[in-house]
Image (tube, rainbow, N blue to C red; front, side, top):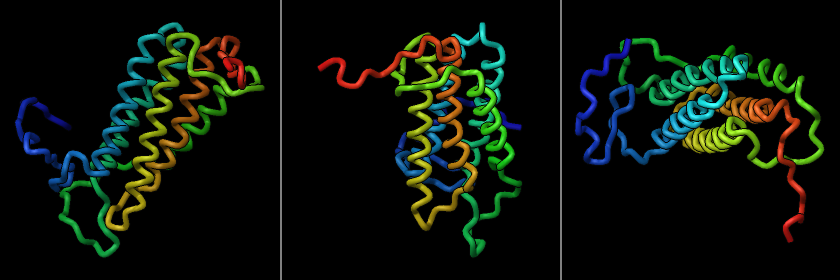
Amino acid sequence: MVTLNKIVTKAGDGGKTRLASGEEVPKHSPRVEAYGAVDETNAAIGVARLHTGALPALDAILARVQNDLFDLGADLATPAKSEDGRGAPLGYEPLRILDAQVDRLEREVDEVNARLSPLNSFILPAGAPAAAHLHLARTIARRAERQVSLLMEDASERVSPATLKYLNRLSDLLFVCARAANDDGAVDVLWKPGATR
């Protein structure tokens, strides 16, 4: 259970923040950048959901994703112990993204994609308001994926491998959800190469 009684703490006024492990790091550290991008993805999905009320199956998928993204943020905010066991004991089992969550995303990508009209061109991030917002969320998810990938390149950092897989599948899911919000792809805005020359 998380209890947030005091919102203004002034603890970050010096440019530092604490990870869930208690470790103090700069607010611009790669780990904070990674879970910050995950938080931005979640917020963008929240805005998209303002426009998905008429699409209850799609909205339910996005609601589950938003909860997963809090799990993913908690995972990233709690560095895994190093292979030699160094690091302060947490006193609790940290929340980690599971392969089962990744598998669920893959199934949902396939289910949503099965009803979409085939693509014969790249599509522009446009169309219905829900679709446009989902495309924005997709691009933020891709940035989160890049940030996690960068974090994983640092040999001193320990990251749960499922976090990167989840973000990769999430951007795929957001793409097909955006198409679903565009009347199952019927009103996708197609890219016309060189059309504006």
